[in-house]
Length: 424
Image 1 (tube, rainbow, N blue to C red):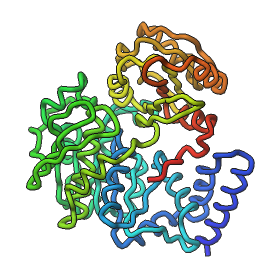
Image 2 (cartoon, helix red, strand yellow):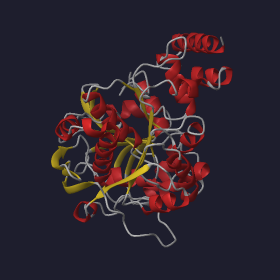
Image 3 (cartoon, one colour):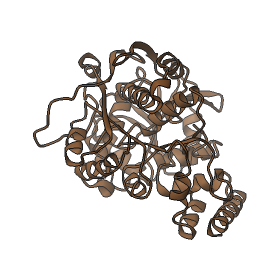
Image 4 (cartoon, one colour):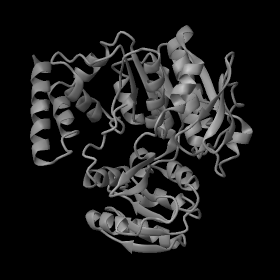
């Protein structure tokens, strides 16, 4: 009865909010449902015959999850997954409001979910995941995570709860420490990157530094080899190599791909088809706002999401050439902008428009780092108009670099009504 009531209330709220605010209503109904029926999420996730698969870490969750889900679906399995960015408990409840039957049953044979580090630690207390993939530990917003050691602790709890398989990034020493502190009975597999490919980034994978002795790099069963721009060779132990061409530039996306391939292999077992999986990745478009290029007001624009020092650095370093026109938007999600000062902005020759609720802080740090600024607009609509009123670039496309809050606001202002509009 409580499930019926919660879902009915959630769906009514969702409709009412969207009548008032087009594109809204994706978060609040989930919050309300979580208060009415707090055990609904765990009950719903326990109903999948294939169990629960978790992808977590500081960065790369959305891309890795999209890749993994696409590969598993290509093998014929029906998968339930969360929309991109809906990776916290409130977002999961919202997904139930949208997709579950009135009894709380979700579609699909298996659940593959990206999860925020802290929220994954809470949810897996109640639902033991069949498989967990941990991508990395990066320095993040100090107001939320305080120290990478706390992130390692949360991820360690999640990893230790895997019942069958645990997949870890061999090139992040944080995860070696994590495994020592949180042993598991699950089978552990390591994925990684060969040294020449790792050297293609001046800051490597930009993982959080460690200040203690760490064991040697584990032997990997899946590795990125011969990375050049968007292309690399994916090598899986015992299965040889397959060429992969990514939809995005950068080493971090290659790591996401190799993590997805090995995660699919562990999940599918003898049914895993390497050739089919590589082909699936080769035909996959980017996750929205992760190097996504689309047309807005008759002009091509690339959307690039940045969420912490590592992702900001890697994405700025992997800009295609020297973009002719750049909008830089930092929103209210960056409560403590101090992390942005640790990034090297030397790859930015200029920024045309700065906006977002942290526009002044963003402009200050760009000027301090010697990046010329065209204009600062505190009003997002004015910023968008000013940016798209610039002449069409003579080369390439327009480039938007934004934080998650600015991304949601800007996409809604541009008519991309749902911040999670791209379903996996």
